[in-house]
Length: 395
Image (cartoon, rainbow, N blue to C red; front, side, top):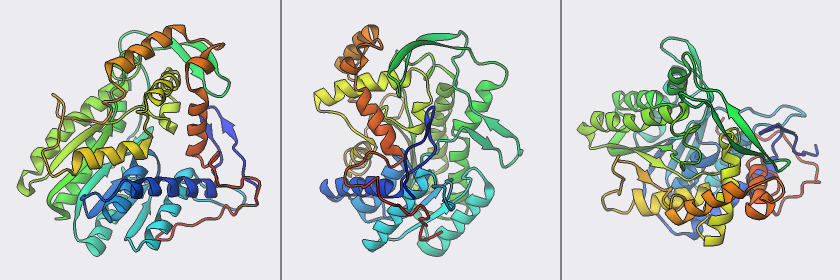
């Protein structure tokens, strides 16, 4: 079939298997170009199919020759209907890893569930023995609590007062004002349940109880802080409460791993175009301005560049891992440079529908968004008849 992008708001309803494969290959080549990393050897990535999770899997495999097990929840293809992009990403990753002689297997299912945890533990026990790095990179709007069987839904809302500020429709380029009503009822509790650290801790406890954590095992979850421009709706909003919980959980997990010399970290990463960030009002406008400035300064990074730097300059240097006053690894350091943020704040006041194309990098935003779904990549013939029925070798 001829596969074209079909947009609905901040979602693309189709994905291109060849484009996703090209994107994965590009990331692999980047990691290879940066040289070997003396990193972990048996790696579990929870949320391994897109964004930072996928970049972590690629960095582990092709930077450290690690065996990787990826857990994700993606839609497989059916005749005449494409899979979700994460499915095609994972298929391409396994294909390339196996060609390189690397162990790579995947589990497709709800990572919040006890059943998927058990399936993962059984596979580690059978194939790897133990894991020495666990990346936790889940991004889901809902979570079914396996203990209570209550379905929790996260919300993106400010706390206390309504929030009004600029945003942009990145498809049309229209800059407008948006107002978001404050959290009410159980909004905060539900968001913490979905996006906080409870499930991360459950994964580590299950691995520890089954003796599947290697001595000195490290686990890393990903977070975001962002600037004052977005803090009312992000860091000081419902999502911020969840991130606070996630970051506090790192200390709880570290305490639980004392007996094996293990440690948990939260890495605060930079703002990037993802399916999740595209859904957050205000963020697309901020990212388009951020991209313009960081590219001009020569410090722009995508997911793969961020994770390569996390691995090579923070996690696996053989030295003590540098953290901020709250114990967090900061890979958002270039984004949060005062000079960068001052320029964004100035441009933010000036940005309108008429001048955003000049002030910001809206084209870069759109390009990255299309790339998420396998569209717009060089070297791919999008007019060619393409087989949508791509399988993942280990599934």
